[in-house]
Length: 162
Image (cartoon, rainbow, N blue to C red; front, top):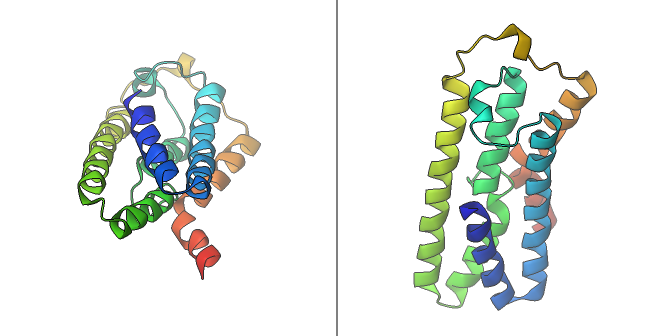
C-alpha cells in the first residue's frame, strides 16, 4: 500500500504541473502495475510471503526483479522515465524540497522492493516437487517481452522526445 501512496504522490505532483503530465504518468504506472498484477494472478500469488516458497523458473524471478525495479523507478528501467520528467518540471518551478522528499520516498520504496526480490531469489531453498509451477512457453514469452520493454524503457522512450 505504501507503493500506491508513493505513486499517488507522484501523480498529484504531475497533476499540479499539467494534466498531460498526469495522464502520461498514469499510463506508465498502469502499464507497470498491470504487468505485476498479471504475474501475480497467473502464478496464484496472493501474499508476498508466497514469493519466498514458490519454486519458480529463474526467468520469472528475473521478470519480478525487472518489474519491481521499474515500478520503484530505478534509472535504467521504464518506471524511472515519468519520474524523471516530473523531477525536471518540479526543479524548473523551484519545488526543491518537494523534489527531495519524492526522491527520498522513492528510495525507501526501492529498499522495500529490493528486500522482497532478494528474499525471493536468494532464499528459495525449498525444493518441493509437489509445489513446482509449470508455466506454458507462451506465458514466458509474454512476460519476457513486457520485461524487456520495461528494461529497455529508457532507451525506447528517449526516441519519443528527440
